[in-house]
Image (cartoon, rainbow, N blue to C red; front, side, top):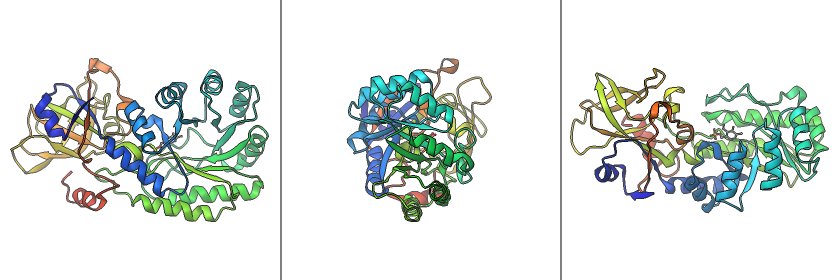
Length: 394
Ligand SMILES: Cc1ncc(COP(=O)(O)O)c(C=O)c1O
């Protein structure tokens, strides 16, 4: 991949006709360092968020050596790129063949479950091996999340104790995991979930070896300004002190978005303008899914040397024929923006290229590395990022 010192210099050099997906490795490194130094436990990376080998390698080189995967393909991808990685198969519903191959071919020992049927499946597919680490996915409130994951997975409190006792006989190490929902905007969510674990572990009188607080840690987007990550970590640390944990109980987290959102920018071209509608060459079937279906606003910047400094709100349409290919924003851009201009769309490192499809033939994508800082950051200049967001500049 070619390197550029900014999106502007990339556009000057390439005048790209298709979208360019950019990676900022320093942003992944900074985020990893922050989690490794401040989270009160082990940090795993949720591979689904952005499985690009360059991201996996950057995180590994920065010290993240445990990975949360959701499929056999992700198991194989991580093993191929990082042979020494510790891989944890934390999707609560898996196919038997996937469990078997993960265990026998890829040396995976950690699996999640949320039912008796899944436990029995894991047991049968590993020939009733006892060297397993099994994590029960608990159902918890997702009320503070911008993107709720509730409903699909998770054991309700009422059946948790029976299931934990059943699992304890089938593994070497037993854990509980949960997910408060993606882009969780209030640290209280983790406290509420951990209080639920406290009640269950007291009533079950069972030793828990791992508590995995999941993902959900937020990133910065215009219109969504979460508390600093330090507040999330201290809320978790305080809530953990109230649970009687074994001395050797490990605490894990498995962030996706917070580790990699800042690593991505997409450079798009304006193909047409109709009043406040901009027709750009990437969209919800490409790298901008969250801007469409979830209505996320990304920070944007028009990449040109001169023109109006007045900003006005725009709606984006993507390149396909489908009317779902709309990103309502609003995105603040120069009032005289027109066909032929380029836009940098920031904070696209999470759930962006991972969701890209070739729908309608829009499958040409260039990739590049950018060496400058992300447009906004939770890690370095959080204060200036927040003031830029508040001033409506992004
Ligand atoms: C099991 C699991 N862990 C971690 C994550 C990462 O979540 P986030 O990107 O919100 O941190 C997800 C996302 O869906 C998940 O399903």
